Image: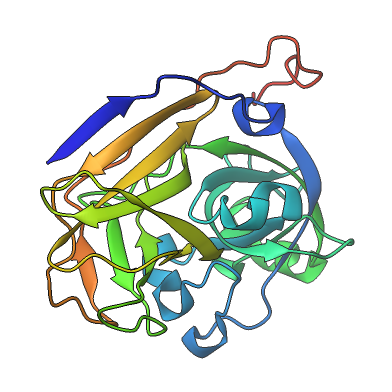
Length: 264
């Protein structure tokens, strides 16, 4: 069961984050190595990367990666070469940040090939690097609640690090807090790296509940869980928050320079 708490005040996020209808332009390449053991993206998904993304994973520009806030977000990407590429493109899940000055995106070979016209997949692969346009879209994880994985760096019962999995909608997690079930003494958590958050203070004893500040465009709200972690939580375990996040970002960029550019 989830409780939705309105904020008493709203602080504006950047227009780049809020104007999710805007198109971004970049060059895209594909990963040369994709075995489970090699998927060590900055989000920290590791060997869960393929399951989370169904093989459609991506590294994205530093600005959109946002020091980890962009982890788990989804984009639709298509190649601009009309002789080789289809109009629909492909959908990718952000699992890594891209620091390259040569490309904005590095996507899985599966996703890269899906941008091609039928029968031209190999030609696109040979091309290697292509011009693309991409836009933010909602993430859909069918029949999946938001899950948290207790990371190996955790030290029961005093230090807790958790990784967020299956974050849906067109959202970002801006902050997170933890408390003992049934109590309201919320303690802040901090983003450690990527999709991993850790306790900043002593972890409360007993079963634990979480609450998240979720942003979608200019909107923010708290989502509170009733109970997530048992009193005997252990690293390596994945726990169900029993909530689904599926908010959509409002299109609030009428005065932005990209407002006239639409996906057609």
